[in-house]
Length: 252
Image: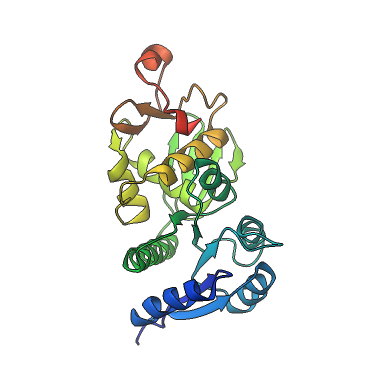
């Protein structure tokens, strides 16, 4: 049986932008739906249950951050959300990703690169769905339990409220403890595409993950920064090598 086309909801108040994105996505076989404001986006999402949302940050009365927050609390809680905005400041990226966004693309953008990001997120989403159908598998480290069937993480018995991308990041790192993952390699594994030279999305997700894992995120115990290289998961870490590892300012 032929697989049905993925449904993509494009939310932007600029008609020219939605037309351009629609054209390129339809060429790749996607079913595209368009909303020009936050209220319309939420109404369509509740009915459509899209496979992915491309969401502009600046939407007027209800901005994209508010829409993202409400999508995450509703029936589309796990849908990949790709933010789109003319803003490129770190604060905007941090705010959007902290509210549940999966990725971030700034205007002006290459339509073909945007399509590549969409395809990568959908591949990852389908891989995650297939993994959930496999027999239950867990990893346990010193009070941490990662359940790959239920996609849940518990720390000393308490369930952590992780986003999809936070869970995927932790899973990649924890499957190979003490291995140093370069930023670009980690980005490819989780987002299944190149970072195109911008790893801020990855660093913000690592920062948000640490806030949920660590007693003191400024002195991480589980996920360490290896200066000049990347990150590693340290289930049996001690403080003896703390001085050798320094957190990048963008990750604070």
